[in-house]
Length: 300
Image 1 (cartoon, helix red, strand yellow):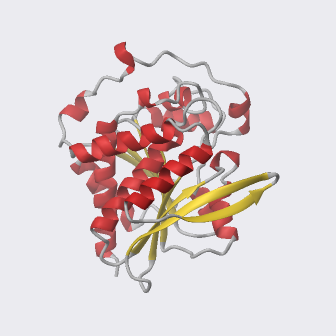
Image 2 (cartoon, rainbow, N blue to C red):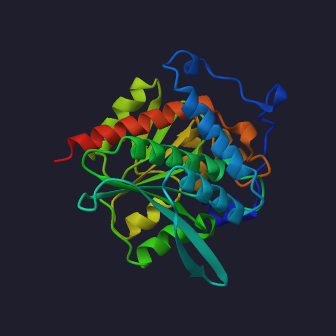
C-alpha cells in the first residue's frame, strides 16, 4: 500500500498493540464462524514469515520465485527501469487454455526500509500465491489465470505501470491484494458497483462470517495503474470494519476519530508477523476464491 507523501515523511505515533506474548487475541467473530482449513492457515503464515524474514526486496522475490517453482509455476521475470533503480516483476502461468480470457491476480512484493513488510505487503503476496495454487489445482471454468508480483509499488506503483507500458496482455480482470492481514471485513475496491464479482463477494464473505465494504474509495495500490490505463481492476484488503472510515479519513487528509491499526503498523518498525492473524486471513482467502469461482462460472 502506497502512503501519501506527507505520511511517508512524517511518521505516525505508534501505539502498543501487542498483547502478552506479542500475539493478537482471536476475536469472537472468528470463533463463531466456519473454521478455515489448517493448510490454508499454516501455509499463508509460513509464506508471510518467509517474505518478512528476507533481508531485502531481492530476497523477498527470491522466496516467491522458489515457491512458484516448487508449485509447478516457474516465474517469468520482467525487468524495468525507474530512474536509476531497476525493478523486477515476477509473473507465472497458473492454469487455463490460451484461448480463454485472462484473469490476472497479483500483489506487490516490495516493502519500505522500515519494518519487515509483513502486512504491507507480504500478506497480500501470500494471498495471491495461495489463490494461484488453488486455481492451478482446480482451474477456473472460463478463464485462464496468471499471477503477478509487482516491484516498486512503494515508489509509485511502478511495477504494475511497467507491465502496462510494456504492452503486456490486457486481462479481462485484474484482481489485486494489498494489506490482507487481519480483521472481520473484506474491503473491496471496485469502480463498478454493479460488477458481478461484487455480489459474488458479498455472498462469499457472508458465508465465511465476514463483513464486506465495497466501493470506489480505497487507498492507493497497484489496481490504480490498471484503472488509469482503463483496464478493468479491483482490489481486496482484509481489515477490521471499524478501521475503514478512519483509514479513508487519513488518506483524504482529515483527522480520524481514532488512528486505525493499519496506519499504526504499515511503513513502521511494527510491520512484523506479530500483527497478522492467519485464522482470519484464511477465511478471507476462502471467501475470495469462492467469489471468483462463482463469478467465473456465471460469465457468459
